[in-house]
Image (cartoon, rainbow, N blue to C red; front, side):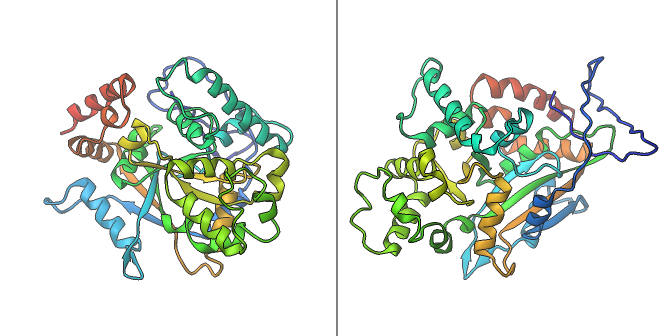
Length: 373
């Protein structure tokens, strides 16, 4: 089973832990740490609008999912300047989970003393995966395309700086409720982050990250002489904005060089920014799950620090809402009802996880669907 994280009140130097119903081991490993207020999380919350949906199912002609989707649509901004806003979504089974990459979680689990080493650790992980992946998968990316390599690594759950998102609210909803833990409670809350994808491809971002100070270092990266002909800084900004926000084989190579510069150039080029990027060659899982990635540029900082800086650039007055956190409170029966409805929409483990993995996962879901009344 998955690890369980609690934040507990201490009374008289004692704590009480209630284990979930499905905990079937006669032993448990307990690591106790003093709780520290998360200043980064508090800073990020200033830019996020929280929406709590408590299920009040009354309309017999409205399904569980229709109700949640209607409330969601009533709360979040649908249009900007007469254009429909495209959101990307990420589901969390616990509303208290943070926006963290699998690479960050691995670093926390196996801490190192100096964050200067993060760059080297990622490079070693990618190199190790490259050396052995050809024995395990039928087709691998070109060696220099580190972006596509990271995408493939995420497909197989390797630690990566890429954070998965979906263009489908319903698929994110499935991921949010798939592994909800009730821990002897009748009601629990999951969360879905909805992010306006215009946050990541505005000119303001590239005006901030490509400057007269660092362009001379960027030009030394090998871009096949594509940028040396430019004489004005705005031309460089347009070039990178176009290639980083649009998927193509050429863009993949440019992204790999721009986002993953050599260590000796890192500090002169990289800034804490988040990009929304997708590889040109979409693997089966990304295609099925309607997936995309958020990629922090500065791996020496957390994903949330990169995101906060991006928001500060785009929303200096905190007047716009680029991020919504949709908290959904569900009883066990309500969750089971949504699983049932998503199954009827053909959104389940079999369809979202290709191959034998998805089929095996689906057997538990089918038991839930069969038991739903």
